[in-house]
Amino acid sequence: MTRRRRNRTAQLRSERGQTIVEFALVGPILIVLLLAIAQGGIAFNHYLAVTDAARAGSREAIMARISSLSVATIQQTAKDAAGDLNASQVGVTVSDPTDPTLQTSGSSVTVTVTYPYSINLLGWVVSSGNLTSSMTDRLE
Image (cartoon, rainbow, N blue to C red; front, side, top):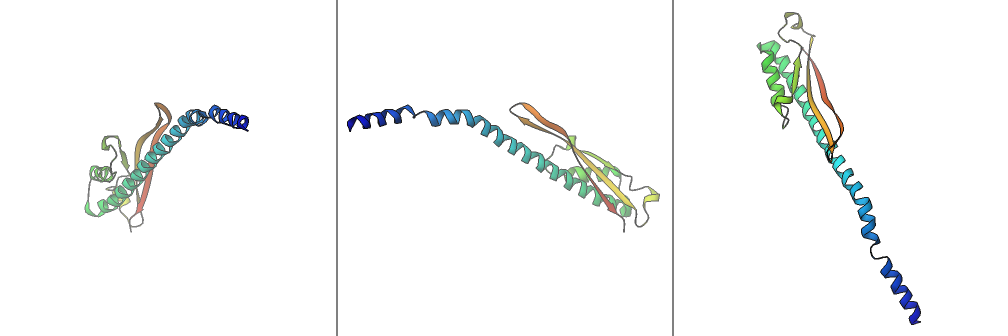
């Protein structure tokens, strides 16, 4: 009987480092996956900010038709609404709201906001480009 116990004890001792080895193999993959999820969340947050900026700029452009605001004011309103994005990298284009042909009821104005993004995983760029959102409002 003592012989069995010794074999069982030897068997347990031989498997002691198995968990550490498995974690060493799987751990880096899990960490990269966690970083990818975080970077994707940041890019989605930036997309939401770009969409909100386009909405705010479009609303301001409709008001510009009534109160004669300039295109620069509309662009600044969109940049201010972009939240925590770097305002120098936010691009805003506006169809001219002061054009007399656009000031009739039922005409629309479009504001397009772009912002560059890049998803990096441990120094490797996985994806990059521009986040773009356009909003069109109609003068009623």
